[in-house]
Length: 167
Image (tube, rainbow, N blue to C red; front, side, top):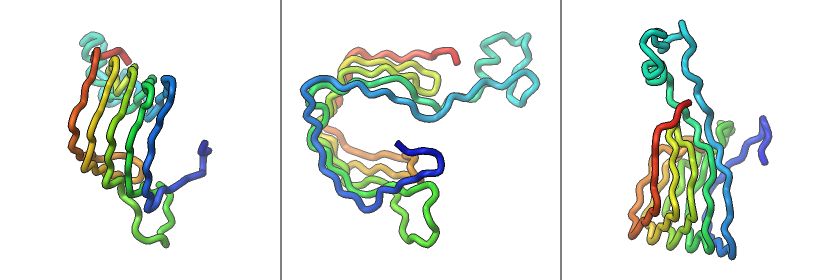
């Protein structure tokens, strides 16, 4: 666990990983922060007479992702990655900040279910299987992903549902 004022950096890593779990593993997810709608009189606020839809549409979208995902049995097989992620408080005397994960590949990922709220949208699924991810490149700015490129042999998603939820 990192506490306020602490930081870490992953530099020049090479990792190979299999997760062969005999039972499902639930992951709680909480990233980013919710953004409250503007209050009356603040920039971006609509007049009360325009109704709740107008007020909702003028609100900034949340950057938060929260909920859970459950990894299925033998969740992660054959993950390989190289690269690194720079610390947000990197010393200027250290040359060559790492900028992402490269040469990422994955033979198999098994997710049993997903139940997330993603920037104001509720997303749920049954099982998700990803097979044959290769030539993957994830560019980072600090520790924030800014792009992902990859080729994938197969993605199967069961029971997908997404709908807007109130803030």
